[in-house]
Length: 240
Image (cartoon, rainbow, N blue to C red):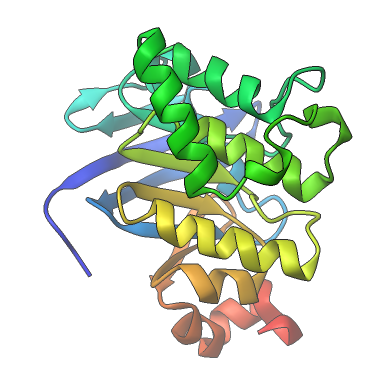
């Protein structure tokens, strides 16, 4: 469902590596408070597309526009400075610090000390991280570390959140909890999630964008894409 305005848009976005067109003239729109999942087979271009959005890669051609600001070529910290929370595939946490210290440091980049204290406590309660708030992150399970990084992202109160495979490597119970967290975060922020787990996607997203050979093959609900012959041929197969 479309609500409000387009908050993120790409225009003829392309990323070439030598003769390989990893992303090929992609036009994409994300609406206010929308949650969109990006899927596709390995090499389809979705991860490269994500990195162009976050500033990890500078596109060869085209543009990325976030709330009317042209960001193609900007550094990741400049993109984040627009109110964008970014979580990459590999957890970016400080293993030697506690859960609370990790979240506090992330929040302190954008807020004063008093506000940071309040937001850190609110985030720990909101994401139900209290049981390991004082434990060093290096001692936590993979799923718990992922939740700490989600806390680091949302503590800064972003209005747009970009997540790359947030449920990868999690147990069934951890995946369930992560789906709940993402739905909760989506109440306050638009989101783009790159993910492979079809059941997880069905739980969190109303609209899915399927990439194939660097382009958008189709968009729609997970159920609709699962029934489409082209989608089954290029990606879903028996997993649908």
